[in-house]
Amino acid sequence: MNEQTVAEWLAAGEGEQSEFKEKYSSRVIESLVALANTAGGHVLIGVNDRGRVVGLADPARVVESVISACREAVSPPLAPTVEIVRLPEGDIVVAQIEATGRMHAKGGAIFLRHGRQTRRASGEEIRFLTLRETPEVYETLPCPGATWEDMDQAVLSKYFELRAPDALKREGVSLARLAVGQTFATERGGEIVPSVAGMVLFGQADRMSFNWRITALRIRGRELTDPIVDRQDLAGPVDNLVREGESFVRNRMRVAYAGFEADGVTRREVPEYPLRAVREALANAVSHRDYSVPSQVQLRMYDDRLEVQSPGGLLPGLTLAEALQGGAPKRRNNVVTRVLWERGLVEAVGFGFALIRQQMRALGAPEPHFEARPSLFLVTLPSRLEQLPEADEGETADDAEI
Picture 1: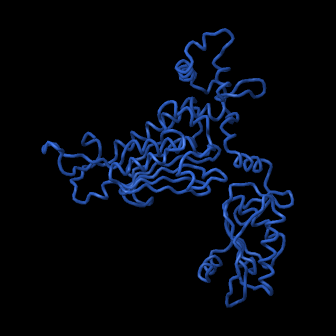
Picture 2: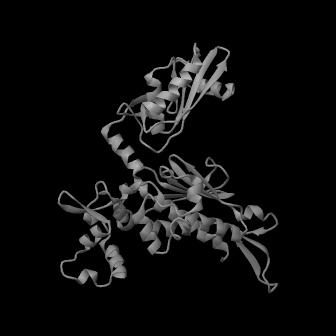
Picture 3: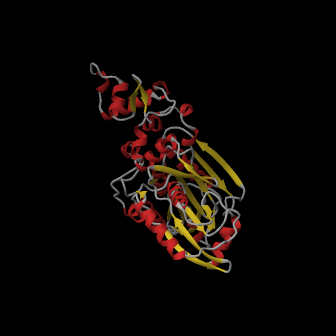
């Protein structure tokens, strides 16, 4: 930890990821618990509320107290990075903690960070944190506000006809009961209602949550602040989202001509992105996203890259290296993923990232980039055309067949 970083934090003041404490007390631990439960951050001890350094008489003892309390008074324990920083005005202690994806408590109380405040979590917030620890449960819960009539029952019937012909003709078998058996629906208050997974897969487009859409953008430039030249809000069941997202890219990506085919006459076309990799990135986004988060999947086409961003980070206990290696035994949305696999829209479970890398290499494009943050997962596909400075570049795929 260097003085420049601390100076920047002091200048920025307290916020959602930053808190100042004049001296060590149990409130410091409450703040660290709140940060771990929210978005991570740091506590500067030896700094008053106005951001003025007052210093600590015994910073080493404060370090020991913070580490000990986080280990013994917090459940599950926290392991913050705690350092002494020597400033001209006096010594302070900086305790940093990352969001863990777990729900931590101090003395049985759950704390959250809200703006500049550390406060106790409400019952609903605790419920959300519990679901975050067991995210695979959320898709099986009743979809908030949805009724059985919100399901596209014709599409649902076709699904069962393909998987179990004549099942609906058997005595005592109804579409609703079949849906309950496959976790597409559940019973609530004596009636059958769609589950979250059921609505995601078979809901009528105009009855589905606005947050479950894909926002597709074509940006003229390399920054999000550059002009947006095209935008579509893609809605409907997840299989439709994947197909429409792939179509958005197909119709807007550029095609280059690099040399000739073996016949010496036909010009060799080089697409900007491998569509199979695009489809896999989109399918992964809609199948592994966190549907409890009020945010949409983002598909962004820049001049030099394509990004697919989905709400929700990796599951607790899963690292990015493990996710990229494939075969992770735990998934956020098992039901949604299974149906997309049955429809041929996702690769064998756990190996989608390997397919994306393989497709990019086969095209001769740069390596894709995968980034996991506490609140999102981002897949970046660099443009193949950035590697073809000598190519005769077309404008879009509409101008030439691929």
